[in-house]
Image (cartoon, rainbow, N blue to C red):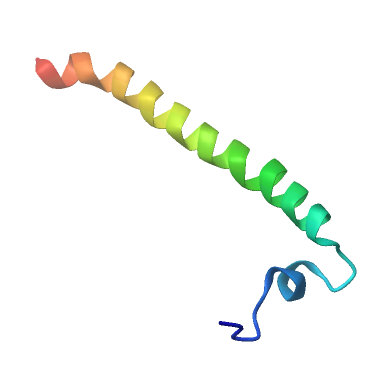
Amino acid sequence: MDKGLTWKKLLGEGMTNQQIETVLLLGVVPIILLTIWFMVFLYNNLAPELEN
């Protein structure tokens, strides 16, 4: 399965697996949550105007 491109090569050879998991948790999860919140926020603001 190894195609030569791994998280270690992307994020640096010196990082441990735990550091990589921390980076992913702190970086990716907030972006996903913000995206979902933003979509809900937009939908709630636009839905009344779309009904008219």
